[in-house]
Amino acid sequence: MNRFSLRTYFPATVDSTLVEGKWQYDTTYHRVPDFQFTSHAGNTFSQKNLEGKLYVANFFYTSCQSPCVQVSTQLSRVQDAFRLQPDVRIVSFSLRPQEDYSTALKQYAQSFRADPSKWIFLTGEDAQIQNLVQNGYRLPSLLEDTVQASTDRYTKQLLLVDKDKHIRGVYDGTDATDVDRLITEINVLLSEYNLTNGK
Image (cartoon, rainbow, N blue to C red; front, side, top):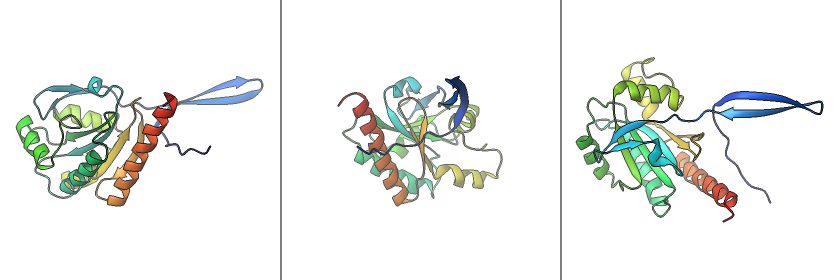
């Protein structure tokens, strides 16, 4: 039986072993590190809340119009597509935590009908966010470009993270066709987990 499998992004190390005169290679992939922020409900939210889940990550800020509104509209589609699937979450990180307190995030979440059990909006210290952007999700530094160029670059991107904290897909959240691909590839991952668990 032929099965489609998603690639894993960002190899961290490649180990080689000589077995019976032949080299065998084993690649270890980057994992998104643990994080802890404040959610739009005012609660502490960490990587532990995502154990056993796969999720879509994105970066935005509440005063952003385009492309943030386009991306959030597309994420509403993703939420609706997996509303009955408890293993799928959406996690949106504010790029302007100095402006986006929990109350602002809560209003923003409500404007997109975000289900708090499915779609979480997070804020925290600016340095933590920057570190997560660069070292967690492996995006270029927010400080390398002008503010507007950085905003345009990061607010369009969606990242699919699997249950092992590996990045399995990168998508343009302003492109409905690319978001369709994201929805398809989430289903591919769910199928992989079901096969692994004998379902």
